[in-house]
Image (cartoon, rainbow, N blue to C red):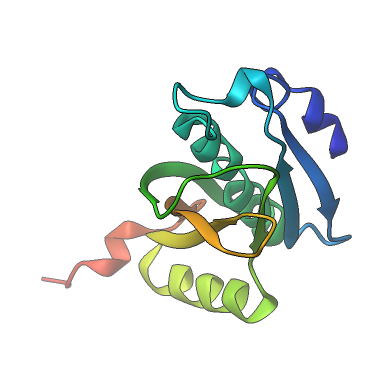
Amino acid sequence: MKLINWWPPMLGTGISLKKVAPDMSRFEVIMKMRWYNKNLVGIHYGGSLYSMCDPWYMFILIAQLGKGYVVMDKGAAIRYKKPGKGTLNCVFEVKKDQVEKIIAELDQVGKKDYTFLCEVKNEEGEVVTEVDKIVYVRKKGFDFDSLTESK
């Protein structure tokens, strides 16, 4: 999985995957300040901050749910809380009970959007950016006709 560090969007922004849980339920990512990921005023470029949060929840859900589900990134909202300087980090995790809840919901409704909060922190542990990641999940082969009332 650490080969992702060589994927151009990661490499080109200075983002690095540091740790992966054996079951792929948790990822730790960092981004060091480099000349190529600074903006005009000398802080981390906003696009790099978003890229830091982009694929991880989708990866986690694909690994945790398995082949019986379609998982796609759907949207995001980003809020800059304070200037991002130095090395930034973010932890992405979906716990087993959350996965079980998602499976139970999808057994009932077939598809749903899930929102996960990403908190990008500086070396002092302060949140510099929040990203709400919206991930679409659909159960493969779900009978949507079963949701309609019979006539």
